[in-house]
Length: 151
Ligand code: ZN
Image 1 (cartoon, rainbow, N blue to C red):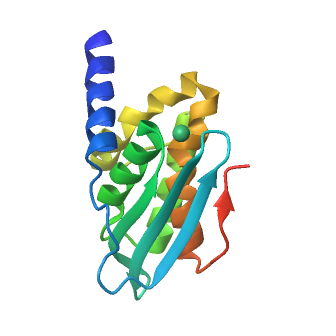
Image 2: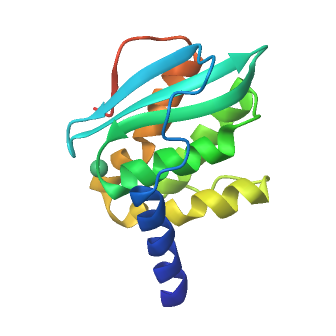
């Protein structure tokens, strides 16, 4: 278990330092800002949605390693998913980081990627860091433009 924990920590630090998809995708047609006042994390999530499918995802912003790693990992798993699939995944992810009943994960590949963040359930203050980008993504996907906060 401690090996696993170390591995998870490494993945989070790696994504925190070198976030993937840290840019505005070409043809971006949806975007939303998220702010987590508890930690000071800010993230803008960019989507290119076409015919209900997320063709490309990117983000920008600044914040703690958890918030940046979460946005980075999210950007990797959402590409190619439909907006409906993305919002279902957000619900599952949120349930898992909040330590609520273990949500049914049927897409093993996504679980492998996102499970590194489930450790935040032991740190309630960090749950908002881990879900910030997802809140912004959900707002962007629905075409909302006002800033979302984790409060
Ligand atoms: Zn944070």
